Length: 161
Image (cartoon, rainbow, N blue to C red):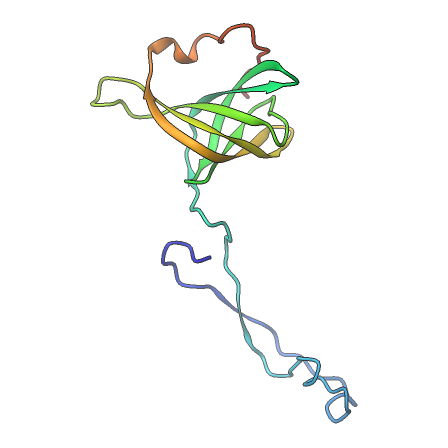
């Protein structure tokens, strides 16, 4: 897919010699779709359908693991309209349904703190990061305690230092 009206990137393939004996034989390089002429290939740099934006914002996440509520904290690495990549020392497992609460860096009407709530599925999880495909999101106003205290009796994970 094209990335927001950006021009395609073309790379020149190097010229190569057709081995002796193939140019005139019945199974020549031409019949195999190989040509001695250089050609240009269309190769997109980043093939994701959504443009990613690098934003580091504090966040918390919530999920259930075998019916046990779990929560963790971390920081976003990048965002797109389709997902979030975040860093944490305790990432949720692949395939987990998760809720993210991201501290938005701007105040509503320069007064009220805002959080971005994201619901989705973990599509990639490593030792220190996870990627979530967004199913739904919304902005909500929040109080100052929103990021200070854990909720309920969930197992906790701390932020990467």
